[in-house]
Length: 363
Image 1 (cartoon, rainbow, N blue to C red):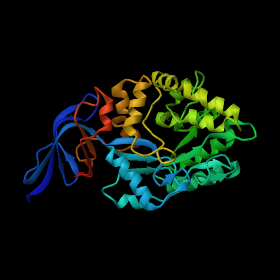
Image 2 (image 1 turned 60 degrees about the horizontal axis):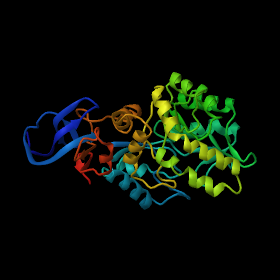
Image 3 (image 1 turned 90 degrees about the vertical axis):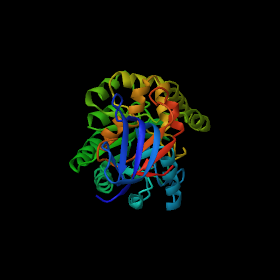
Image 4 (image 1 turned 60 degrees about the vertical axis):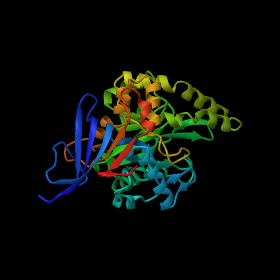
C-alpha cells in the first residue's frame, strides 16, 4: 500500500452523548477507527471532539436588505465554519448558493429554496410573495430547487389588524404541504404567533421555526405529531428592540412581541418536557451575524434543557434529523476539537481549538 498523509485525532471522541472513543484517524478526508497502514506525515490533534455543529436555521446569501454578492455569502459561510458550524440548513434565501457545493473548505448547506410568503406580508426582497391560489405551484417550484425542504412564512404582521396573524387559509396549506411531500420535500414555516400553529400542524407540517406562539393547547399537538421546532433564541432576544421600534405605529403588535419574548424560555422548556424535538438554529443572515450556533446551544441550556440534550440538538440529534452522518466510520471528517468536555460546560463551544472539514484542518 502506498504511503498516505493522515490526521490522528486523539483524546475523547464524542461519537454520541454516551459513546466515547479514544482516537480516530482521518484518511483521504474520511473517518476511520482503525490505524491506517502505510501512513506518513501523521499530524495530530488532541482534545474533546464533536461532529461539526449544526445551524438548522440560517441564511447564507442574505442580509437585512435581500440577496448579497457571492463574496459576502462566502464570508458568511466562513464565519460559520470557523465557529465550528459545518452543516447548515439554509431556511430560505433569494441567492443561488449552489456554487458553494464545489468548495471543500465551506460548510455543507441543505437548502430550502426561497421563502414563500403572502403578498406584502414579509420582509421586502426576501421571499416569493404570492396569493393562496398560487401557493401549491410555488411550493412545487421550491421543492424542486431545494435540498429536501421548503420554507413558508406562516404568520407576519397584518398592517390593517395591527398585529401578527396567520398568512394562509387552512385549505391552501393542506394542499401545499401535500404537494411538497409528494415531491419528497419536508416543509417548515416561520411562525411567531399562536393562531397559525394548529392549522399548519394538522395540515402535516414537519417543522416550525421560532415557535414562540406555542401554548398549552398546541404543545400536545406538536408532540403527538412529532413536529420539530427550531426556537432561534438568539434571534428572539431581538424582540424587545423590534417592539420599541414599532410602538408608535403598531402598539398591539409591539405588546404581543414583548409577551412572546418574556415567556420564550418557558415555551422552549415546556416543548422539550412534552417530547417535542428541539434543534439548534440561529436565524443568522438577516439582522444577525453568522457564527452563533454555540451561543444558541447555551441559550437552550438557559431555557432549562439539560446540557447534553442541548448539545445533541446542535450535533448528533440534529445531524440524524437532517439525514447527515456524524463521527461514523467512513463518514466525511467534519469535526471540531475543544479544550474541555462540552457536555460539562457548553460555553466551550464558543472557543474551538481545531476545526476539521472534509479531513482538512481549516481553523
